[in-house]
Length: 128
Image (cartoon, rainbow, N blue to C red):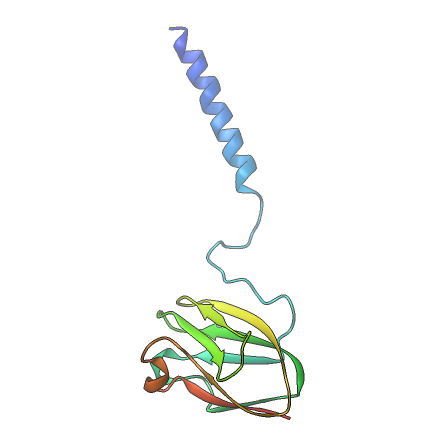
């Protein structure tokens, strides 16, 4: 047996041990989207370019946690017309969450990717 063979075996065992330590013991799949940390006050679902899961939504005034679920393979965004500081961007089959403080009133939710709003990705949000 050559002297290099035991060294190669040692290096191979080291690599296997290092990979085992780095891989962790998480049962959670790497492809599963993260769940929002807090229970959302409102959930909006993007259903391809045809629009959202509802034509209108309602929520109470104040601090709102909004979850955005993208059930389509295309990327989508969620913005509130004329409201700065709120923006969620998702790739295909992803979820996102953001928090915003809104006063009572009527707002418009939409996807601001070129052509998506015109294709039907727009909904009303009534804050009471």
